Image (cartoon, rainbow over all chains, first blue to last red; front, side):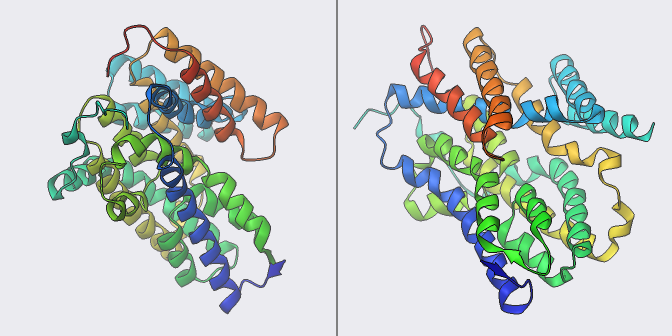
Amino acid sequence: MSVEPLGWGLMLIVAVMAVVTLATRWGGVFIMSFVPIGRRVRQFIGAMSGSVLVALLAPLAVQGDGGARLALATTAAVMLVLKKPLPAIAAGIAAAALFRQI
Amino acid sequence: MHATNTPLPQCKLDRHLVWAGFRHMVPIAVFVLVFGAAFGLAAMQSGLDAAWVVLMSTLVFAGAAQFAVLDLWGAQVPIVALALTVFAINARHLLMGATLYPWLRQLPPARRYGVMVLASDANWALAMQAFGRGQPGLGMLLGGGLALWLFWVLGTWLGTQIGDVIADARRWGLDMVMGCFLLAMVAGERKSLRTLVIWAVAACSSLAACRYLPENSHVMAGALAGGVLGMAWTEQSRER
């Protein structure tokens, strides 16, 4: 099914996007309200929270261009040395920008 | 019911905490502003009206999904494919909500779901970091979310007005803002052998999913693999 992105059609598109996104924001909390929180579930949640980030980042690092890789490597290096997120992020972005200018 | 060992003060949510979270997020949100401008420009170039672009950013507030939708744009937009794409890219919110649940459940339902309306990568990561340190995190989630949302909408609007200025956000490394931010969060976490193994499994599963599973399923696959391993593998003398 397709709609024309004009008037009501456009309104429908934006509404679908908003509702689906809101459902993902609420869904996890809603589902968990039926799950008793025991030790195992706590461990699951704890391990999953870091894993979400790693799973997001892994393809960026492996499939990204040189600029993306350099940015991530720089951020990681600065973060491990300085332990401050903002300089690490700034350095990463600067590294990607520099790489892509050349 | 299991006795909870989460101290209640961590679930505090008042004006001061929200404001603190907002201020904490502003430096990151400035980057989001530019990213939003890039979206505003791209959306205009796809043929959307400025007012609709801003409305979309206001109501949807999900950068990656909004960019992806532009790829589907044309004279006709396939609505089911659109809904599936948005769901797949935003499915990570499901995981975020689940990881926040141990703290959120101590709020009344209206506030619990109210706070989640603005849940997004960066403020979720800051909230989890705060909880991990034993500090209150819901202010980070709500205040940080407000900052991100405000700058995202503002940036989108700017992009529709003066987009040419940031015509090439990628060239300036601005597509890497979220990646670098999230990596900084990961690198700052307390690491043990167990954590590193779990992360390695999550990374490998995510990469395998990129190759063999449908598009946009990699975050879900990696996070669930890491979570299941974490559930099976109990750390000795684990204390919260």
